[in-house]
Structure formats: C-alpha cells, structure tokens
Image (tube, one colour):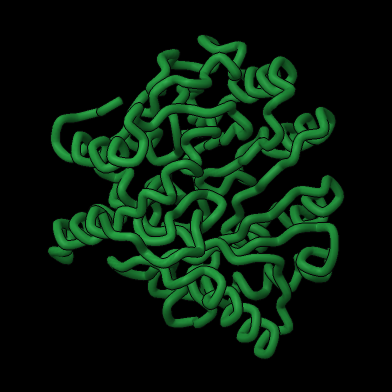
Length: 331
C-alpha cells in the first residue's frame, strides 16, 4: 500500500518486479513496542528524535493492553522493547516480568549508557535475572566515531556498560548480547560478517569485551538523520544511493512482514520507521484496542514510503541486522 505519491510508488514498483502482489504480511511473530521518546542521549542518527527533554511515554494502560495481546496471541514469540531508552519507562520492568511469565523471548534495545544513569544501578542485574536478550547500540569500536555521533564520553560509558554486562554473564553463555552498528554518515554498512570480526578483535584486545553477534543497520532518512542530510546537502544523493542499491533478495524477509509495531500512545504500525512518520498500519486498525487476533493480519498489505529503500539496500537492513550475506544486487 502506497503512503504517498512521491517516492512510494517507485519503491512499490521495485518490489513488484520480484513479487507481483506487492509487499504483504506473513504470520506475525514479533510485537515491537516503542515505549516512548525519553532518552538520556540525543544521537545524531536517531530516527525517533529521542532525548532527555522528550515527554512522550507509554502509559500503563497501553502496556497492560500489550500484555493482553500477548496472552491472546500465543504465536507472538518475541516482545521487542525499544525507545528512546526503554528502560526509563516506569512500566519497563513490569512489561519484562509479564512477558517472561508468558514465556516470551524479550529483547531490550539498549543504548548502554543508560546502565550508568542514577537509579539504574541494578538494571543490568534485572536484565540478567530475567534472561532478557540485550541488543546494544555501539556504532563503532573507535572512540572518535561514537562520540561524534552520540556525544562526548559516550564511548567510554558504553565500554564500561559492556564490561558490566560481561561480568553478569552476557556474551559469555546463555545470556545473549548483540551489538548494533550503523554508519556515521550517508553510506551503507560494510559486510556484516567481516565487520563483526573487526569488532570482536578490537573490543576483546583493547577492553576485554565479548559479545555474541553484530547487527548492521542502515540509517533511515527520516527525522533527525533526515535533518542532518538536509543540513549537509546530501539528502538527494543518499536517496539515490538507497534506490540504486535495492536488492530484491531482501524482500521476502523484510521485518515489516512479520512484525507489529506499537507506539507509546497505543497506535499500531507496520514498523518503527513508519511509526515515526505517523503512517498507520496498512492492514487497517489504528490502535491496540482495534486488534485482537494478530494472525488475521496475514496477507494484508504493508504500507510503504520512500524511506523503505533503506531496508532493501545492499545486504538489506532490519532490526535483526543484515538480511542477506550475498553481494549487492542493484535494481
């Protein structure tokens, strides 16, 4: 389903070359929950426009409805909690406990430095005790690049937090710790496997840090990153780069096909990026109170827009990292 005339049609046309029926949903497996825009950081690449001064935060009644949806829909295997810094939401720990009670896999998309915030001294232990899968943002293994993107001192704080997580057992056994790389500029991520090797070597040799996997994610040209592109005069060039690098092999496994995205206010979307652009669920149903049986979304259209090219460029990009390890197949 096209969301707007400019650009969306061209993305849909690219998809239909390999899938004549267009981008449609498969069976939902992940409920991704953006619990608000409050964050202790204000990163340059942030597609949420999160920061310390943001006040949008998921109220408890929405969190309770999400748990109801998990109970109603046993096919949802994963609760993927993001933000902002999701841990700063007062309902975060309650959500984790409830989801684990229901035997769901829980992902916490963590910026690492939140573990060092006042009042969060026991956060790492809480995550470990509940078997939470931590997906931690670390846009580079070098200090200069991280601090340029996330603010002075971000790298040192992130390394300290990673060392704390390692001490709790993350990256060393059953507690899974993945890192996330995103480019510091208007270019695509390098091959995920080779970059993971570099991260592993550098972090272990320099800091004794261990992790399980690296996820490479392309910057999506919306919100704060789009503003940076405009200021630097690179928006059009980046849009052309993404479109030229469209890889049809990524389309079958795009995250929007099996994910339902819930915003802090309870509105429902096809993905977190569409959520930030206020594009409602392509299948219809505007809020968590409009939906009960999430399996009924199977076969429904996914709403698309020009920013969707970021997820299909090169090896592809999703919340789980690169979609394909194969070389780029330009359209």
